[in-house]
Each structure stands twice: as C-alpha cells, then as structure tokens.
Amino acid sequence: MLTRLIYFAGSTIAIEYDTERAGRILDYLFRDIQAHSQDRPHLTYHLVQDDPGGNYCLYAEDTLVLRDQPEEEIAAYLLDRTCFHLADRSQGGMVIHAAGLAWKGLGLLLPGPSGRGKSTLAAWLLEHGFGYLTDELVFIPDGASEFEGLARPLNLKNTAREVLKEMLAYQEKPDEIIHSLGREITPPRVLNPQAVIRSARLQLIVFPHFQEGASYDLRHLSKARAGLALMEGLINARNLEQHGFPQIARLARQTPAYEMIYGAFEQIEGKIEELFEALSQGDGS
Image (cartoon, rainbow, N blue to C red; front, side, top):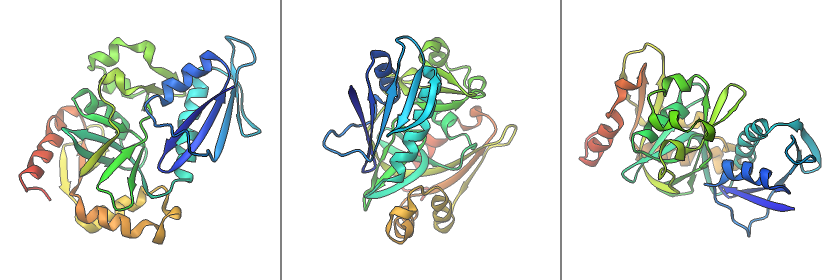
C-alpha cells in the first residue's frame, strides 16, 4: 500500500492506494501540491481498485463514501473534498475562497462566491502569461505579505469550453482534461506549461463578476467594503483569533481592491496588467 500526502495551510491529509492507475489519478490531481512527510494527517482516504482496469471504491478512514465509480468521478470527488478537509483543519493564517495568480511576480487575488467566473478568468489569465497558484483556496500566513495557493487543476464548468474556445492549447490537448458532472478538470500546464508557482507577494485584489452581455466596469473599493467582501470568503474564520477580523482588516488596509464587471474577455484584455502598472507608479491604491 502506497501513501500520498497532501499539505496546505498547516493541514495534511493522506490517500492510500495500491495500483499504478490509482497513482496516476492522484498525480494528475495533486502533482503541484506540497507533501510534507513529517506531518501527521488528520484524515486518511483509501482508494481501492478490486478489479485491475475496473472501477474504484473510496473510503474515508473506515467509511465507504464511493462505490464502484469510474476514474473521472473519483477525481471530481477528491478534488472537492480535499479542499474542504484541508481548509477545515487549517492553522497559522487565513484561508480565503479565491483564485490566486501572479503577473511578473506580483500577486493577484480573485475572491468571490461560486458562479462569478473565478476559475474561467484564471484559465484565461494563464493563457495570457500569468502564473498560477490556485483557482479555489488561498492561504495567507499570519502577518505575511505573501500568499500561497492550493495548486489543484482548474475546475471549469462545461460552459467554459465555449468561452475559452479560442485558446489553442486548450483545444489541442483534450485527452489531458477530465470530464465529469458538467465540468472539466483542467491541469494548469494545459494552458501554460510553466505556470505553477508556489507563492507570490500580494499586490492587488480584484473581485470579478462575469455577466453575459454586461458592459465593462471597474470600481475601486473602499477599505471597508473590501474588508466586508473578503470576510464573506474567509473559509476558516472559526480557526482564527477573533474570527479573523484583525487579519482581514490588515489585508484590506494594505492591498488595493477593485470590483470588475465584464461580459466578454475582449473587454478586459490588458486591464489587470494596467492596474499593476498603475500601482507600480504609485497610482491606484
């Protein structure tokens, strides 16, 4: 029996498996996520394939959670549940529901609830040269100015294929994308082979809001409004002193924040890069 350790935000889970095919699934999902062998996992999954070449069963500790499922359903389940369990036991800083990217080493946070287009925007930015940290969970250690991301594959709704259809790399590598339950699990290397980075210094927060047919609108947010919006995406508030209010306040004070509404990617071509340029010249905070 082999073990894969997955570490993020001071939290570790383990997945035990015993076949080469199972190992390939886990490598597909977690190859870019750190594994600290010295950390004791707080949860262990067991991925079992009774019939070589057949479907899988998945256990959480001793509890059967999936029975006789194909690879794509196992991958989708683990993609979701590992995020939950890592955030649930996180320690030492804030975990925020956000995509995290970087432009020329400068960190960008894209927070917001599901359905606002964070993952699709992250994919588009990747194809336009941004570095990738995550499309789902960002970790900011206590007192730090840098953030880390849970570098999982992007979790794109099937509708994203139409939006991203002009991405040459995306179209050329269909075999590297897992299709499951109305979504496409897409490794960042499909869009940008050198995209994944470990951490970035946070310089800019943009709350994206995709609305089909909408006109482009960029609004600077006050520190108070940015703080309130960030609190809505703070996943691990119960693990933090004062529920994370002081940490969120520090983040909102230090980092310029904007709301960006758009109805097509053509509207935002170069816009985020321009924000970074303005900040580097001292205009935009």
